[in-house]
Length: 234
Image 1 (spheres, rainbow, N blue to C red):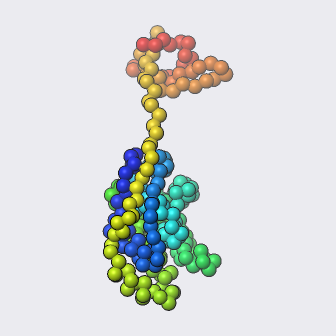
Image 2 (cartoon, rainbow, N blue to C red; image 1 turned 180 degrees about the horizontal axis):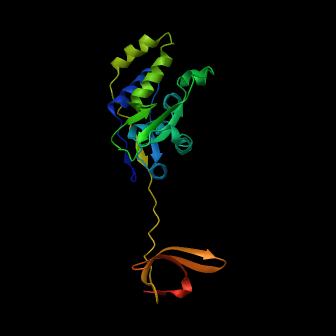
């Protein structure tokens, strides 16, 4: 899980995709995400998001978002809505049309929606994804979608020629996680004793009609729920 602020490391494929975007005249300056937001999403997903996915979400670029379906504010909804469409050992992170740019720009629906998923628990160093049963990388998948869209432009060959003249990396582009993951201090363990059940550990406290009840794991008697007044601190 991402639980500390620090740089995000794009794969070579993502750098190549961003170089193509630079050839189209785009500039990428600051690209940051709040690490506490990322940590909360990953905790809910039970999986680690690849750095390539985090970078694309941090860029908030209209075309990259269209090509991948990756957005910070929708990823948990996608995971819940599309859980049945992801393999058993994967978690869904994005959903998009087979022809996302046509759907966006021309209102043309390209058939069944595609679901992008990552392995659970996942590996932060791996940008691998699964889309409709086929393994790919996020950057490779996005480039395919963008390429199909751009081939309709008259200057497509000039863009490719310009891309070859650009360096792979833009020194000013330093994507990173910022902020701090705030964790609640763990509650101290509370051990209690009961005249019949012996010693135990309190695992939950709850109120019932004004009475405090304790769920206790007893060393010899198992788990019991008792009124707090019937036990003493051990």
